Image (cartoon, rainbow, N blue to C red; front, side, top):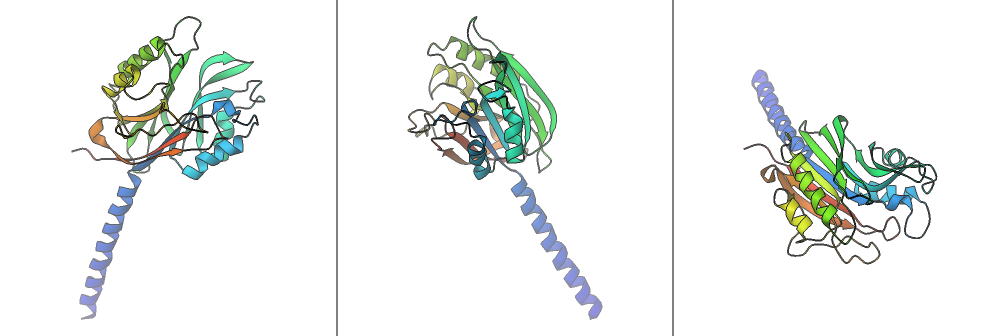
Length: 267
């Protein structure tokens, strides 16, 4: 009898352990991503407050963040390396990607990540003479669920005449549609839903926002239009769990855009 009881207890423990493992794996498939134009650290009240920016990120607790308008040791940013400073304040791994020289330093995009990098690249996007250069930065990483994914951050041209912005969207599609791994694209696209720029991207990428009621992300004091996005491909590998526009009227002139995704298994 004692021997039989031992076997029964062992089977129960094994069953419970197996169930717990599956639940953990499901939780690990959840990835929180953020796009945040940080206004080169200036804040909207004229202060220079990296702690305020970091608080927006820390409160949201994302796994991956695409940052736009990031300064690297410029005079206006008090010679700070903003990506590294925000990485320190959020306990995330920073990666700065230069778009151009500016103000005795550099200016571009950055990524913050809770996961280490397998591979990174910074790609120059097309731009017209005398317009600001634009780039897109990509990391490839392994998540907590041991899945390999790619995460891309970008910032498209802001001018009202959208020639550069359209060409940049076309180039992003050309570069990344052949990606080997499930991919997330995040950034300030500087254009609204149903615009030519967004239509070009959405021909291939799936957007996370509600197309019937897109939540505006700019300006942060009174959001009126959506210009910040998180998209993904392939569509069948991702499920949108939640989207949140994080409004802090001081931290930046943009709201942060936070999306919780689930990485689905292959069929």
